[in-house]
Image (tube, rainbow, N blue to C red; front, side):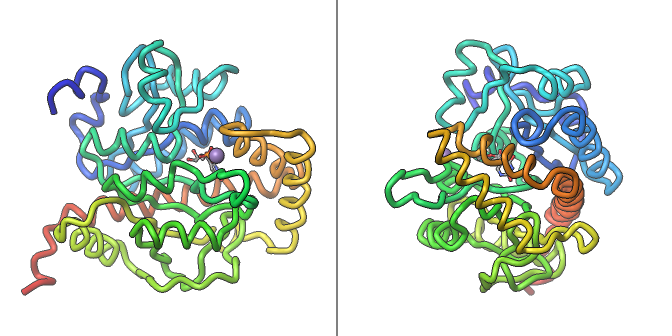
Length: 308
Ligand code: PSU
Ligand code: MN
Protein backbone atom coordinates (compact mmCIF):
# COMPACT_ATOMS: atom_id res chain seq x y z
CA UNK A 1 0.00 0.00 0.00
CA UNK A 2 3.10 2.20 -0.14
CA UNK A 3 2.99 5.66 1.37
CA UNK A 4 -0.67 5.44 2.32
CA UNK A 5 0.49 3.42 5.31
CA UNK A 6 2.23 6.51 6.69
CA UNK A 7 -1.16 8.07 7.33
CA UNK A 8 -3.08 5.04 8.51
CA UNK A 9 -3.06 3.66 12.04
CA UNK A 10 -5.03 0.52 12.85
CA UNK A 11 -6.07 -0.24 16.44
CA UNK A 12 -5.15 -3.61 17.99
CA UNK A 13 -8.69 -4.98 17.85
CA UNK A 14 -8.87 -4.07 14.15
CA UNK A 15 -5.46 -5.57 13.34
CA UNK A 16 -6.41 -8.83 15.01
CA UNK A 17 -10.10 -8.95 14.06
CA UNK A 18 -12.07 -10.42 11.19
CA UNK A 19 -15.42 -9.38 9.72
CA UNK A 20 -14.57 -5.71 10.15
CA UNK A 21 -17.32 -3.11 10.26
CA UNK A 22 -16.39 0.55 9.75
CA UNK A 23 -18.24 3.14 11.87
CA UNK A 24 -18.16 6.90 11.22
CA UNK A 25 -17.45 9.72 13.64
CA UNK A 26 -19.33 12.72 12.18
CA UNK A 27 -22.48 11.20 13.68
CA UNK A 28 -20.70 11.35 17.09
CA UNK A 29 -19.31 14.89 16.81
CA UNK A 30 -21.93 16.61 14.65
CA UNK A 31 -24.97 14.32 14.46
CA UNK A 32 -25.99 13.57 18.05
CA UNK A 33 -25.91 15.63 21.29
CA UNK A 34 -23.75 14.82 24.31
CA UNK A 35 -24.02 12.50 26.23
CA UNK A 36 -26.16 10.37 23.89
CA UNK A 37 -23.43 10.60 21.23
CA UNK A 38 -20.86 8.93 23.49
CA UNK A 39 -23.31 6.31 24.76
CA UNK A 40 -24.28 5.53 21.17
CA UNK A 41 -20.68 5.37 19.91
CA UNK A 42 -19.91 2.77 22.59
CA UNK A 43 -23.17 0.89 22.10
CA UNK A 44 -22.59 0.60 18.34
CA UNK A 45 -19.19 -0.99 18.87
CA UNK A 46 -20.75 -3.41 21.35
CA UNK A 47 -23.54 -4.40 18.97
CA UNK A 48 -20.95 -5.26 16.32
CA UNK A 49 -18.93 -7.33 18.82
CA UNK A 50 -22.02 -9.16 20.10
CA UNK A 51 -22.76 -10.32 16.54
CA UNK A 52 -19.27 -11.79 16.26
CA UNK A 53 -17.76 -9.06 14.06
CA UNK A 54 -15.14 -6.36 14.74
CA UNK A 55 -15.93 -2.64 15.05
CA UNK A 56 -13.60 -0.06 13.48
CA UNK A 57 -14.62 3.47 14.39
CA UNK A 58 -12.76 5.94 12.16
CA UNK A 59 -11.51 9.48 12.86
CA UNK A 60 -8.49 11.73 12.22
CA UNK A 61 -6.02 12.41 15.02
CA UNK A 62 -2.38 13.56 15.20
CA UNK A 63 -1.83 13.39 11.46
CA UNK A 64 -3.20 9.85 11.13
CA UNK A 65 -6.40 8.24 9.92
CA UNK A 66 -7.19 6.16 12.97
CA UNK A 67 -9.14 2.98 12.25
CA UNK A 68 -10.31 1.59 15.59
CA UNK A 69 -10.43 4.05 18.46
CA UNK A 70 -9.98 3.75 22.21
CA UNK A 71 -12.25 5.23 24.90
CA UNK A 72 -10.24 8.48 25.25
CA UNK A 73 -10.58 9.21 21.52
CA UNK A 74 -14.32 8.46 21.52
CA UNK A 75 -14.69 10.83 24.47
CA UNK A 76 -12.79 13.61 22.74
CA UNK A 77 -14.92 13.23 19.60
CA UNK A 78 -18.09 13.34 21.72
CA UNK A 79 -17.16 16.33 23.88
CA UNK A 80 -14.74 18.71 22.12
CA UNK A 81 -16.29 21.77 20.53
CA UNK A 82 -14.05 22.30 17.51
CA UNK A 83 -13.85 18.84 15.97
CA UNK A 84 -13.48 19.27 12.18
CA UNK A 85 -16.11 17.68 9.97
CA UNK A 86 -14.00 15.78 7.45
CA UNK A 87 -15.29 14.79 4.03
CA UNK A 88 -13.10 13.53 1.14
CA UNK A 89 -11.74 16.99 0.27
CA UNK A 90 -10.80 17.71 3.91
CA UNK A 91 -8.74 14.53 4.48
CA UNK A 92 -5.32 15.95 3.43
CA UNK A 93 -5.99 19.36 4.98
CA UNK A 94 -6.87 18.08 8.46
CA UNK A 95 -4.12 15.41 8.37
CA UNK A 96 -1.56 18.09 7.47
CA UNK A 97 -2.49 20.23 10.46
CA UNK A 98 -2.67 17.13 12.69
CA UNK A 99 -6.16 18.11 13.79
CA UNK A 100 -8.95 16.12 15.42
CA UNK A 101 -11.41 15.26 12.67
CA UNK A 102 -14.72 13.42 12.52
CA UNK A 103 -15.22 11.56 9.24
CA UNK A 104 -18.40 11.76 7.17
CA UNK A 105 -19.76 8.83 5.21
CA UNK A 106 -17.55 9.83 2.25
CA UNK A 107 -14.31 10.07 4.25
CA UNK A 108 -15.15 6.98 6.32
CA UNK A 109 -15.69 4.98 3.12
CA UNK A 110 -12.31 6.05 1.78
CA UNK A 111 -10.57 5.26 5.07
CA UNK A 112 -12.32 1.87 5.18
CA UNK A 113 -11.09 1.16 1.65
CA UNK A 114 -7.51 2.01 2.68
CA UNK A 115 -7.84 -0.40 5.60
CA UNK A 116 -9.38 -3.08 3.36
CA UNK A 117 -12.77 -2.93 5.14
CA UNK A 118 -15.76 -3.70 2.91
CA UNK A 119 -18.70 -2.99 5.21
CA UNK A 120 -19.76 0.23 6.94
CA UNK A 121 -22.80 0.74 9.16
CA UNK A 122 -24.28 4.17 9.88
CA UNK A 123 -27.49 6.20 10.30
CA UNK A 124 -28.18 8.57 7.44
CA UNK A 125 -26.53 9.23 4.12
CA UNK A 126 -25.86 12.70 2.72
CA UNK A 127 -27.54 13.39 -0.60
CA UNK A 128 -28.94 15.93 -3.03
CA UNK A 129 -30.32 18.82 -1.02
CA UNK A 130 -33.70 20.33 -1.77
CA UNK A 131 -33.00 23.30 -4.04
CA UNK A 132 -29.76 21.76 -5.32
CA UNK A 133 -30.63 22.93 -8.83
CA UNK A 134 -29.57 26.41 -7.72
CA UNK A 135 -27.27 25.72 -4.72
CA UNK A 136 -25.34 22.77 -6.27
CA UNK A 137 -25.44 21.25 -2.76
CA UNK A 138 -24.88 17.56 -3.40
CA UNK A 139 -23.11 15.55 -0.71
CA UNK A 140 -19.70 14.09 -1.50
CA UNK A 141 -21.14 10.88 0.00
CA UNK A 142 -22.78 10.22 -3.36
CA UNK A 143 -19.65 10.60 -5.49
CA UNK A 144 -17.76 8.49 -2.95
CA UNK A 145 -20.33 5.75 -3.39
CA UNK A 146 -19.67 5.96 -7.12
CA UNK A 147 -15.95 5.26 -6.76
CA UNK A 148 -15.12 3.46 -3.48
CA UNK A 149 -15.93 -0.24 -3.00
CA UNK A 150 -17.69 -0.30 0.36
CA UNK A 151 -21.20 -1.47 1.32
CA UNK A 152 -22.95 1.26 3.32
CA UNK A 153 -25.78 0.10 5.57
CA UNK A 154 -28.00 3.04 6.51
CA UNK A 155 -31.61 4.10 7.07
CA UNK A 156 -31.72 5.90 3.72
CA UNK A 157 -31.55 9.65 4.12
CA UNK A 158 -33.54 12.26 5.99
CA UNK A 159 -36.05 14.14 3.92
CA UNK A 160 -34.12 17.36 4.65
CA UNK A 161 -32.82 16.10 1.29
CA UNK A 162 -34.58 15.63 -1.99
CA UNK A 163 -34.83 11.85 -1.83
CA UNK A 164 -35.98 11.38 -5.43
CA UNK A 165 -33.08 13.43 -6.80
CA UNK A 166 -30.70 11.54 -4.50
CA UNK A 167 -31.86 8.25 -6.03
CA UNK A 168 -31.56 9.66 -9.56
CA UNK A 169 -28.01 10.74 -8.83
CA UNK A 170 -27.08 7.33 -7.45
CA UNK A 171 -28.58 5.68 -10.51
CA UNK A 172 -26.50 7.91 -12.80
CA UNK A 173 -23.40 7.03 -10.80
CA UNK A 174 -24.10 3.28 -11.00
CA UNK A 175 -24.71 2.74 -7.30
CA UNK A 176 -27.17 -0.05 -6.39
CA UNK A 177 -29.63 0.93 -3.66
CA UNK A 178 -30.96 -2.23 -2.05
CA UNK A 179 -33.98 -2.18 0.24
CA UNK A 180 -33.30 -4.49 3.17
CA UNK A 181 -36.53 -6.40 3.75
CA UNK A 182 -38.38 -3.51 2.13
CA UNK A 183 -39.47 -2.33 -1.34
CA UNK A 184 -39.58 1.33 -0.30
CA UNK A 185 -36.72 3.75 0.32
CA UNK A 186 -36.74 4.50 4.06
CA UNK A 187 -36.56 8.19 5.02
CA UNK A 188 -34.46 7.75 8.17
CA UNK A 189 -36.98 8.40 10.99
CA UNK A 190 -39.73 6.74 9.07
CA UNK A 191 -39.95 3.64 6.92
CA UNK A 192 -42.18 5.61 4.52
CA UNK A 193 -40.97 7.86 1.74
CA UNK A 194 -43.41 6.89 -1.00
CA UNK A 195 -40.41 6.11 -3.21
CA UNK A 196 -40.17 2.55 -4.49
CA UNK A 197 -36.88 0.67 -4.85
CA UNK A 198 -36.15 -1.83 -7.59
CA UNK A 199 -33.65 -3.92 -5.64
CA UNK A 200 -34.37 -5.83 -2.47
CA UNK A 201 -32.52 -8.29 -0.24
CA UNK A 202 -33.93 -10.25 2.68
CA UNK A 203 -30.76 -11.80 4.07
CA UNK A 204 -27.14 -10.74 4.67
CA UNK A 205 -26.06 -13.47 2.23
CA UNK A 206 -28.07 -11.90 -0.59
CA UNK A 207 -26.35 -8.57 0.00
CA UNK A 208 -22.94 -10.27 0.12
CA UNK A 209 -23.71 -12.05 -3.15
CA UNK A 210 -24.67 -8.84 -4.95
CA UNK A 211 -21.50 -7.13 -3.68
CA UNK A 212 -19.30 -10.04 -4.72
CA UNK A 213 -20.76 -10.07 -8.23
CA UNK A 214 -20.48 -6.29 -8.58
CA UNK A 215 -16.81 -6.33 -7.64
CA UNK A 216 -16.04 -9.54 -9.58
CA UNK A 217 -17.34 -7.75 -12.68
CA UNK A 218 -14.88 -4.94 -12.09
CA UNK A 219 -17.66 -2.46 -11.42
CA UNK A 220 -16.15 0.21 -9.22
CA UNK A 221 -17.86 1.83 -6.29
CA UNK A 222 -20.11 1.05 -3.38
CA UNK A 223 -23.54 -0.25 -2.58
CA UNK A 224 -26.26 1.26 -0.41
CA UNK A 225 -28.26 -1.08 1.80
CA UNK A 226 -31.29 0.86 3.01
CA UNK A 227 -32.82 -0.45 6.23
CA UNK A 228 -36.08 0.93 7.68
CA UNK A 229 -36.01 1.96 11.35
CA UNK A 230 -37.08 -0.91 13.64
CA UNK A 231 -40.92 -0.99 14.00
CA UNK A 232 -40.94 0.24 17.64
CA UNK A 233 -38.92 3.32 16.61
CA UNK A 234 -40.67 4.07 13.29
CA UNK A 235 -42.14 7.61 13.50
CA UNK A 236 -45.23 8.86 11.63
CA UNK A 237 -44.34 10.46 8.28
CA UNK A 238 -46.51 13.57 8.85
CA UNK A 239 -44.94 14.42 12.18
CA UNK A 240 -41.42 14.25 10.78
CA UNK A 241 -42.29 16.23 7.66
CA UNK A 242 -43.59 19.11 9.77
CA UNK A 243 -40.36 19.24 11.78
CA UNK A 244 -38.28 19.07 8.64
CA UNK A 245 -40.09 21.96 6.91
CA UNK A 246 -39.53 24.11 9.97
CA UNK A 247 -35.85 23.15 10.05
CA UNK A 248 -35.47 24.00 6.34
CA UNK A 249 -37.14 27.39 6.87
CA UNK A 250 -34.78 28.12 9.78
CA UNK A 251 -31.72 27.22 7.66
CA UNK A 252 -32.96 29.47 4.88
CA UNK A 253 -33.51 32.36 7.28
CA UNK A 254 -30.08 31.91 8.87
CA UNK A 255 -28.43 31.77 5.42
CA UNK A 256 -26.46 28.60 6.25
CA UNK A 257 -24.16 27.40 3.46
CA UNK A 258 -21.71 24.64 2.54
CA UNK A 259 -20.66 21.95 4.99
CA UNK A 260 -22.58 23.65 7.81
CA UNK A 261 -25.94 22.92 6.15
CA UNK A 262 -26.30 19.27 7.19
CA UNK A 263 -25.23 19.72 10.87
CA UNK A 264 -27.53 22.79 11.10
CA UNK A 265 -30.51 20.83 9.74
CA UNK A 266 -29.77 17.78 11.91
CA UNK A 267 -29.73 19.97 14.98
CA UNK A 268 -32.86 21.91 14.00
CA UNK A 269 -34.82 18.70 13.32
CA UNK A 270 -33.69 17.30 16.64
CA UNK A 271 -34.85 20.41 18.52
CA UNK A 272 -38.18 20.37 16.67
CA UNK A 273 -38.89 16.75 17.55
CA UNK A 274 -37.04 16.49 20.86
CA UNK A 275 -37.03 13.16 22.62
CA UNK A 276 -38.69 10.78 20.25
CA UNK A 277 -36.48 11.50 17.23
CA UNK A 278 -33.33 11.02 19.26
CA UNK A 279 -34.61 7.64 20.46
CA UNK A 280 -35.35 6.67 16.86
CA UNK A 281 -31.92 7.86 15.75
CA UNK A 282 -30.14 5.72 18.34
CA UNK A 283 -32.37 2.69 17.72
CA UNK A 284 -31.85 2.70 13.96
CA UNK A 285 -28.09 3.15 14.31
CA UNK A 286 -27.88 0.03 16.48
CA UNK A 287 -30.14 -1.87 14.13
CA UNK A 288 -28.08 -0.85 11.09
CA UNK A 289 -24.67 -1.73 12.53
CA UNK A 290 -26.04 -5.11 13.67
CA UNK A 291 -27.07 -5.83 10.07
CA UNK A 292 -23.69 -4.50 8.90
CA UNK A 293 -22.00 -7.05 11.20
CA UNK A 294 -24.10 -9.85 9.69
CA UNK A 295 -23.20 -8.73 6.16
CA UNK A 296 -19.49 -8.59 7.09
CA UNK A 297 -19.75 -12.16 8.36
CA UNK A 298 -21.64 -13.26 5.23
CA UNK A 299 -18.89 -11.76 3.05
CA UNK A 300 -16.36 -14.04 4.75
CA UNK A 301 -18.13 -17.08 3.29
CA UNK A 302 -16.65 -17.77 -0.15
CA UNK A 303 -20.10 -18.12 -1.67
CA UNK A 304 -18.88 -20.39 -4.48
CA UNK A 305 -21.77 -22.84 -4.02
CA UNK A 306 -24.07 -20.19 -5.44
CA UNK A 307 -22.25 -20.20 -8.77
CA UNK A 308 -21.93 -23.95 -9.38
N1 PSU B 1 -27.37 12.49 7.85
C1 PSU B 1 -27.82 12.09 9.06
N2 PSU B 1 -26.94 12.00 10.10
C2 PSU B 1 -25.62 12.33 9.96
C3 PSU B 1 -25.16 12.77 8.67
C4 PSU B 1 -26.06 12.83 7.65
O1 PSU B 1 -28.98 11.78 9.20
O2 PSU B 1 -24.86 12.27 10.94
C5 PSU B 1 -23.71 13.10 8.48
C6 PSU B 1 -22.96 11.91 7.86
O3 PSU B 1 -21.65 11.86 8.40
C7 PSU B 1 -22.90 12.29 6.40
C8 PSU B 1 -22.74 13.78 6.48
O4 PSU B 1 -21.85 11.69 5.68
O5 PSU B 1 -23.57 14.17 7.55
C9 PSU B 1 -23.12 14.46 5.19
O6 PSU B 1 -22.74 15.80 5.21
P1 PSU B 1 -22.81 16.67 3.89
O7 PSU B 1 -24.27 16.77 3.56
O8 PSU B 1 -22.21 17.99 4.27
O9 PSU B 1 -22.04 15.94 2.85
MN1 MN C 1 -23.33 19.87 1.26
